[in-house]
Image 1 (spheres, rainbow, N blue to C red):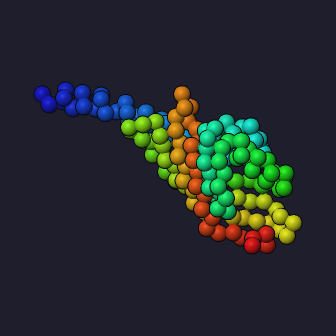
Image 2: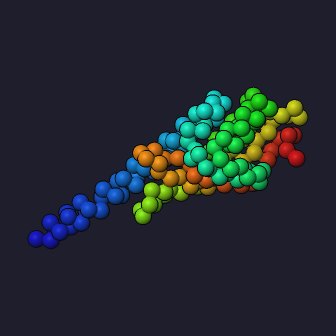
Image 3: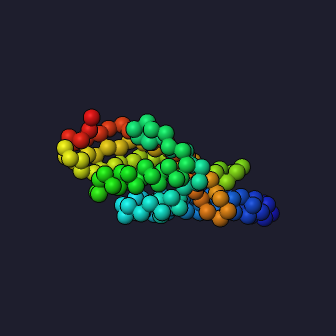
Amino acid sequence: MFRRPLTWLFAFALPGTVGAQDDAETIRMLRSESNEAIARHDVPAILSFLDDEVHVTAGSGAMIDGAEAMGAAFAQQFESYDDVVYVRTPGSVEVGTSRPAAAEVGTWVGTWVAPSGAVRTGGHYAAYWRKRGDSWVIRSELFVTLYCEGSGCS
């Protein structure tokens, strides 16, 4: 007798939950693809994950505004260090219920070889994703450097 009302409750509750889970998995997949683009030093591919008006606070504390400026920053790093790689690893991705936005929090690691030797740096990051049409893009990111190892660290 009481089973049918619970079935209706789950029928209305699950689609939003499933959609949020699907979106969270999509964002995790996009983060992985973004990491791969950085490893390939593919600036156009990197930019495809960013909102045109993205705001980034780099681990150095530098503030970068706009996808074009981010592309220039990556191109400069790729020119300076032909082996530079950044890997961001999501710890959590939470998709909003009232608007098409998501919060990603995780850890990041950057590696390269400087003239003075190998560098390994990293810390924590937070990203704000928003849905643009059918696609998720990064609206803003904050990277906090918590360590730097190697002779190239200052």
